Length: 487
Image (cartoon, rainbow, N blue to C red; front, side, top):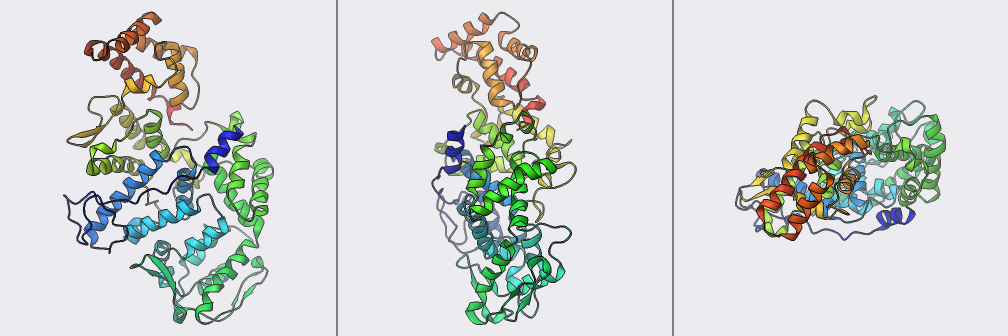
């Protein structure tokens, strides 16, 4: 277990190639980016090309998740996207979205304090929470509030107050977004250079105002002041990590035995995230039966997890256009299930991670559950999930079965499918029900003979169809179980 945790946490996946123009036949890129080339360093263009670039960014993100290999990086990127929320449909520039996602990737397993500083100056965040418009004569308090309430300290009695929000806003005046070079710059003429005084929560700290280019240094003073409230900040972020990976309910016992320990590890490691993850994932608590298989999967875990579990690969040989459309179809499925990549519903993130008392139960409702089931049902049909006139997503059940330990033995095959595709084990009676689908209510030898006939007679359509139809029906029924939606 310890080696497995080290493998996924300490791996260092290669930086993926950027998203590309797949839309040339639909809408020729007005900035001159050709089909198959990346647009991330091109000018904005217009609203239409920006829309197609957004689609390609979502497709690119889904592709990265499915092809990253053994690593927790992409999972942590979803966590941080839900923490440092930005919405593309508010900012409206896909180049900034790409830059924002890359910032998350760079810091996903790095230093939390460094991450807060970087996200504060990120062009997309500067637009999203009005930092770009925060100037000395008219301080904007939007980011000043969220950097405390949502990003570092949390909210509650005896914490920061409204005067602190105003003071933080003044500290952060002058940061501007550069949409030509996709970076930030500091405009000292728009910076409030007077002293900023904070409340007793921050020990009545006074951040000395600085004029000129030195005004940018006040950001470091601000972060030092916030992170000096180390237990408050560390516990806040560790609770969010716990809710994301374990369970939403943090009672007094969890707070004292788990959260406090994780927070102390975060502080003692100078705000580096990896030691916290290693401690959590190697703890006895993480593997306690009451801590496992108790969360409803979020849509990304569900749809993309099924692609991985069923060994469904999108072959680049289908071409740039269909490949991008296939990955984007997965993003659309997530969006339809209330988890749009790049567009959480608000600055607070997806409600399933904070909305009491429902939390994760909000992923399932009368709209989203049928959509999930139609997806898995479609994967086991000839029609599959439509991508284009020449390509569709579907599960090659014969290939999937061949990757299992002993597909000719129906008992072993069912056990493997339950293990890979369900969060919880089934009773033997239930397993026998699914086995009888394979055997057509005959003895085990029926399936064994059918599988061996298929293997020993490649190209024989009759033998292949017998095995394929039995597998498709069994998997369709198996994935209709409630246990399939847990993690």
